[in-house]
Image (cartoon, rainbow, N blue to C red; front, side, top):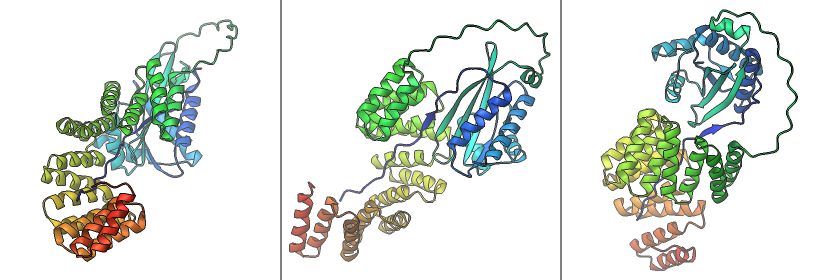
Length: 425
């Protein structure tokens, strides 16, 4: 009887609406960033303010210290003390004023037991400076871009940068107020509309809106990513692969895009490319439990059961409550005819998710086919049907167990019920 494998699409990057483009003073910029971060956080998470990449240690220190005070004042988070963060950065050969990648931020954040990490950068843009900040979740691997804030080239920021102030120029005459702009949809408008469709599982309309977004901005990484997710949900794997490839072009370290492209390749039975993508996701983030899980699924499809078990082991080591990894490792043990270990894994999956019909059916199959323990098999199929009274395959498989026990009447009744529910062997 067919075993049931769990699969998942994960790895999300989100971008939020931009602040107005009028330049503000540095302290006002920090307040804006703090407000936007606090709006994204549930009450009480541990946050590590890791870095602001800038030419000046003084500017980075000022920004991070003031942002910490801002967040602590809002009581929306628990900011990890600066000394602890600096020790962790030093151990990782990183600096609070230097560049830190998303993967490095996750790694340092985990050593600090943080739930979110914050990194940023400052750059000169014409007459002003632009500060961009990233809020990185260590819970679900999502990445939120706090849209750039323009900061005036004022005496304060010049002093922090160590720039000798010049004599002030006379203030220019006020320009006439611009005419009110006509309402024109931006790429991000279409993205947000597409995301709303996506969240409602309306993938056709989501694809249309994400398409508008990338036509207006061919570097809109989230639009490509979620359009890829929409295609994969519809079984359109070639289109999904094309979109994830574009997301990787824009953000080469986007481990979630590698993961999901690996899933798309696996759905096409292109196992070698799938393994390559999962492996790259793991290279970018060695603690990426979902990537180990996905690669384990591909190894099992290739009948490389020892390799699949090794990857499921690693996924479980990283996430001891990963019920799907226990379930799928149980399938690989069953494939190797190691029935006791298979049953133990299905049992652990059920302990974590008590209503897991998938694991009940798999354990019943092992009891029936491997151990010839028909009574325990019946008990598990009964439980699966209790949880889901319309579970057609469970009726069909329970009918097979009744056949094995010589109870033809019950076997025929269960198989008839399965056909009534639309099951075809």
